[in-house]
Amino acid sequence: MPVKILMVCLGNICRSPLAEGILASKLPTEKFLVDSAGTGSWHVGHAPDKRSISTAKKNGLDICNQKGRQFSRADFDTFDYIFVMDSSNYNDVIHLAQNETQKAKVQLILDAIFPDENVDVPDPYYGMANGFDQVYKMLDEACEVIAERLIAKHSE
Ligand code: 4NP
Image 1: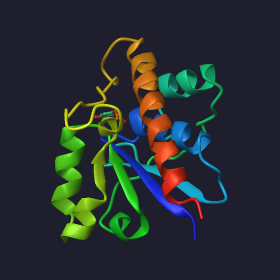
Image 2 (image 1 turned 60 degrees about the vertical axis):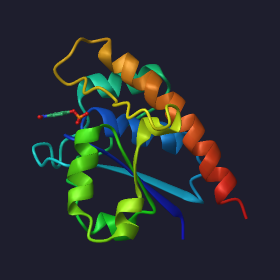
Image 3 (image 1 turned 90 degrees about the vertical axis):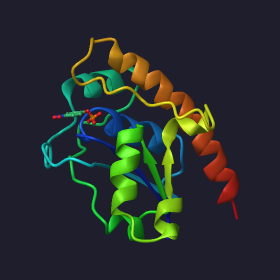
Image 4 (image 1 turned 135 degrees about the horizontal axis):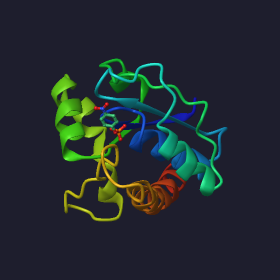
């Protein structure tokens, strides 16, 4: 059984699709499965935002086959690790948890590089075009650390 990791943002079209693509590219597929979801339902069934697709492409990643879906309680059972993009996603996901084991699976993704500082990945949806490059860089740095830790932890 692969180790399963879920990336969560609000819409599942900007940040978490990038996080999914970036982390998946750093992990061996036979051991790890990476998925993403949104806490909101507006973009269920949609492809990622064009700006996320082009930012990924510039960096050698193809994320255009991803499809938006909404986070649900069942994800707490399916996934071993749940990384959220910001504190609002954190509160929304924690609110759905039914016990401490489920809560313990949820981490703010930038804790990997800024531990205990509560740093959010800013939502680039309504922002400037270069917001996507900034988001990509933050996620790439965090996912590098996360991938190293996962590989070390699940190496036998
Ligand atoms: P994301 O960005 O959470 O990074 O996917 C958003 C995309 C769409 C919306 C909100 C956030 N929206 O409200 O439609």
